[in-house]
Length: 117
Image (cartoon, rainbow, N blue to C red; front, side):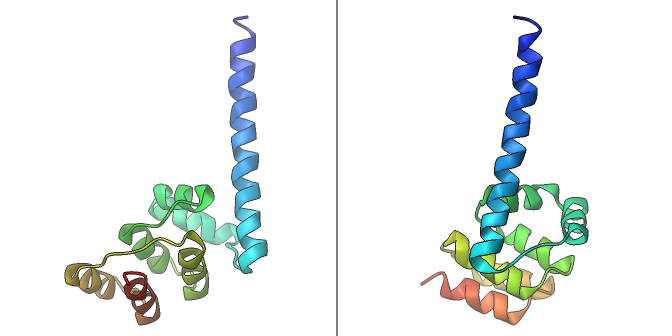
């Protein structure tokens, strides 16, 4: 039994990775948006938690949106992901100023504000 436990952990980890990859592929096929290998590396370097959220289809926090924008992920991808997760954002005026100061595009900020309604 002791020999089986590590094997079960390994199988569980492999199954999770396959699910994550499959989930990202679903997003790519349904929305026509994708991240290439270089973009994934840039996100992982700046904020690994943001990349994990993308793989897990979790809603993005303001920090994640700033991270994606700062590493050069396209507005098209960010907006598509925001629409796909259907999160309602309740932005304060401080949030808007922070997004603007961080270089997030007005298009993304406008979309986030519309998601407040």
